[in-house]
Length: 76
Image 1: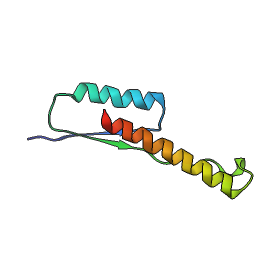
Image 2 (image 1 turned 135 degrees about the vertical axis):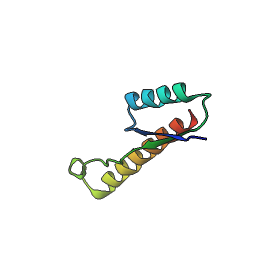
Image 3 (image 1 turned 135 degrees about the horizontal axis):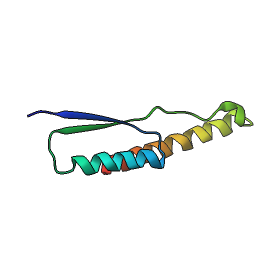
């Protein structure tokens, strides 16, 4: 059995969501596919926040949003 691997780079955008849906649609029903989602975490720029606590809170929110996006992508 041949295994075909597909790597989708995502950034949490609508375009990334459409890319995941497209790959899911064209591979649905066909066996032998391994699909991986790749995202590089990009934290907010520290200079935009008044203190470390506000920056860390924004980092946590950014990470939670990205993890939610990846979880939704896995469910497709």
